[in-house]
Image (spheres, rainbow, N blue to C red):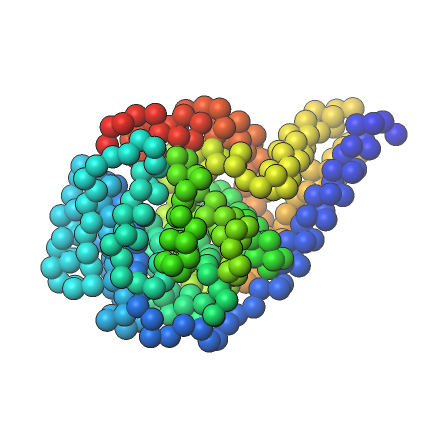
Amino acid sequence: MTVLFVFYILSTVVYGFFIVSLVFGLNRLKTQKSGLQHTFVSVIIPARNEEKNISKCLKALIGQSYPKELFEILIVDDFSTDLTGQIVREFAAQHNNIRLISLTETNTGVSPKKRAIEAGIQQSRGEIIFTTDADSLAPPGWLETVLRYFDEDTGLVASWLQVNPGKKLLGKLESLDSLSMVITGAAAFGLGFPVLANGANLAYRKSLFQDMNGFQGSEQLASGDDDLLLQKIFKQSKWKAVFAPDLSASVSTEANFSLQDFFSQRVRWASKSGTYPLSVLAFEIFLYCYFLFIFLSIPLLFVSFVYLIFPAVKLLLDYVVMKRGCDKLNRNLSPVYFLPAIFFQMGYILIAGIAGLTGKFTWKNRLYLKGKPVSSKN
């Protein structure tokens, strides 16, 4: 038995243990029926050139089952050059719980999105801060469902973000890729080691955000207004961070329009991974190497078909945890798209993982280098 073959066996065993742990974490997620009630909350939405999405986002928020007098919606216009501000003003004229906040100055030392969120929090009146994106849609019971998870010891609540697959192949692949990350994040909450969350569906106590000095420590990074904040709270405070598994707390968004948009988004997400806790970073490096060697095992099939075992085992393990997550979301897991989605995911991770830490990318018409803004322009 060669050293290479032994490595494949050992790495597959480690990966198998990881997947079994995720399934265990998902099974530990429980619904909660009581928590905060009659609490005033603030929904903060950073928006830059979102004229195509902001109307649908606001209509979904206006339709919340939570009492209108108990929540406000703050749209923070991040130097939009389209009709975003005008559309929000029209909504605000008809709904007194909608406000438009327009940023008036830039700060190259702070990520634009984080700057926008902080500006919204500064002007907010809510005890609980909800964040979502301008291209996301919240279900009617979103606010009241998430609030049920805020007991006296809870400081942060996260929940599902689902990408609508649409009709294009890229959308279907992205939907499964995004779902795998959300499932991993949810399972980590269940295991008591929360490390992943998404700012499109996140809520936390305003007082906790202020006590933790907000995004200080990661303010320059383009991404991380969600999981880096979660990790900071988990590490430096005594507050609990929990996951709301209810479908009524699940927020949806649309897939990227192009492969370039998708890749740019993933590179932006990868740009923060170097700041993760050492234990998480070490396991990310293991996964990166594991994915690389799975790809390299394909040419080895010409030497011996026994190497087919390793990609086959990985696919089986991935299917098990994805199926468990889909069951919780009442979603079907199509084998037709599952297989290409797994290889698509491994492929882009191998590229984006390096590009995010070392290269340039653009987001919202802004240039970033190694995850940090490099231009003072709005």
